[in-house]
Length: 73
Image 1 (cartoon, rainbow, N blue to C red):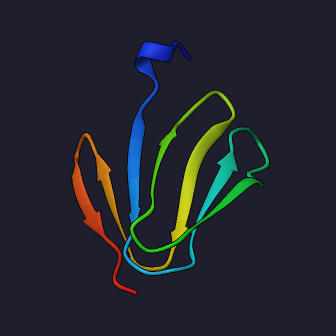
Image 2 (image 1 turned 90 degrees about the vertical axis):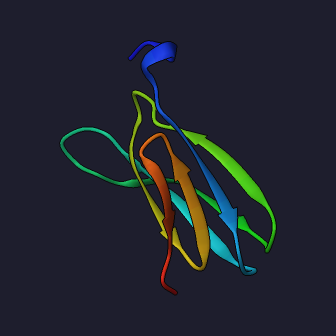
């Protein structure tokens, strides 16, 4: 995947302890990276050849090119 075609998202923690979990691409989806954010922290993440999905646990705002999503927890 070319760098100019990779998508970025921005995650802003609204509470302490928000977890961002990267999931691998391929036949077997596995966890490959975890970050923990505290209230007010921002993480800019990128989908790559190795990352096909992200799981976000906790209260956060997620900004994408498609709009903003707020978690319900």
